[in-house]
Image (cartoon, rainbow, N blue to C red; front, side, top):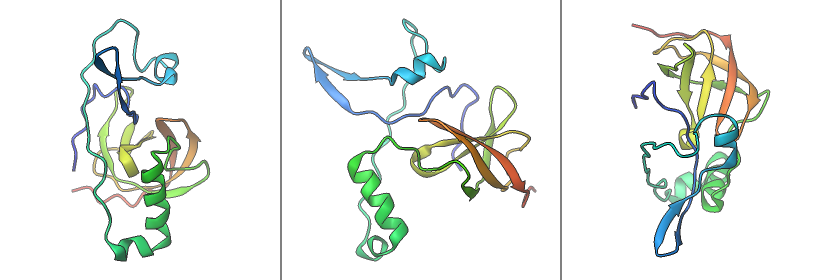
Length: 144
């Protein structure tokens, strides 16, 4: 399980671009308007590799084909949709006390009223570019 620090403020995908003899990663404007980042502040940035190529067996399944197409297009679309029911694992607690789960591509799903280790079934209620908010539909917690 990946430990997510409480100081995590934002997760998004971006392309490294060459500009004026240097390299730039652009921050989506929504990150500033939603107060995830503040202009003229310094932040630590993690760089993650793109997923490895899939085997031909995995590429044959409809779900893998959709995921592969999304990865190849570097689509900014969230991997969840409003009204979708998902099984998630709560990995940590955020600054506001809500449970945090990650799904495909490291996309963050915030689940109020949940605790690390719980594996609830949730309904996605609100989807934003970099985060979704969900409510617990059924608590299949397997806490130890």
